[in-house]
Image 1 (tube, rainbow, N blue to C red):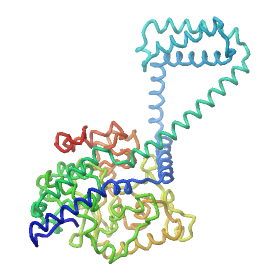
Image 2 (image 1 turned 45 degrees about the horizontal axis):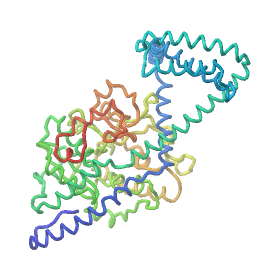
Image 3 (image 1 turned 30 degrees about the vertical axis):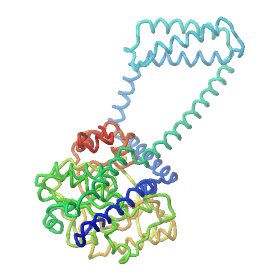
Image 4 (image 1 turned 135 degrees about the horizontal axis):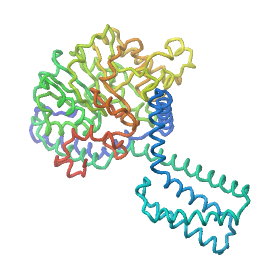
Length: 518
């Protein structure tokens, strides 16, 4: 942990801070690059899973929903009928032009080229027929007249059919190429730290090391180990993400003074996140910021080593796997709620603490409804062709989501599930039992140890599905931007951004200086 003791002279303390600050700042770029590398194969597989989930959702919708979509599509066709006809005219005209000799300067060729320009100009940026000008219909009639001449000039239908098929194939190839490019750019955007966030971390880090050690302490630290309070944890290396999780939880709470937030980050981001919450304390709630480097027992007690030869941070990021050590991180606590850093809390969560856990360890929202895009089968990420897996687990067992989980730490300790996690982790190193990430490891570690929460506690999909029902979002206690389109990125789904943005103070001077705007 990067805290300093008050022993020794003030000069010694400040000199030590300066050296550590230099090391932190100089390594920040390298650290960010390493943490943000993404394995393209894993991304491709995840993208396929998401596409399949969205397809299943559409296929499984009730008849009245499908009928509603058909009616809506029919209405859309009616309001764009003329526009579609004009676009079709342009395609036909270009097909006829392709049949003309390359050096042809006939009046018909000139006429078709002129009509194509006129019709395209008439369409312009129109999205419905009512946007078209009166002259557009006149140009449409002129184009039809030119097309009639072309039909008489080029009567060979088979030749025209071949031309159209070739044009279609070429267009489809271009579309596939564009899709691949878009997929790559989305992957790149999701794995790259925005310049504004990097600037913010640098500024806050410099300010943190300028503080005297005594000024780096948070108030009310005596509450950190009180099991009677509501304890929440989030593990993150993102300043703004942590801010939204904390601010939204406290804002929605009926008794914010009973909330204790435990933020755990890496050594690189510890100064920045600490400085942010020193400058922006969470009202009546208590907050603690820790560095994973302060958990010396992680290497001595468990001899933990994640797969270092992988470029996928879901293997190498200790923060992502730290969730499996909750009883050791918080030895004095009985229960804790763990958030992913891409959630927003909309309702008071105090009722969670009275949920009957039925002797189970993990309280989570299940993903068992095939009509939902969040639906996942066990065999989505787990290799059931392996005899050990097939014997130990049921491929049809109901799955659940990380993002907001209630953990009974007493039951966890009693059942020693961290040791079980290590067993599965090592097995996964020896042979391909599951794909990257902590979710499949969570499924097997907490297999038969999970109690289902009402789905209104936690709704997923805001990071990849633009069709999440708005009423469901508004009713949910916690909304989750799982997927690559995180709300702090430019690629976020526009319709969901405001749920996240309202918990960020964009008037803050640090955000203004780093050009971070709504």
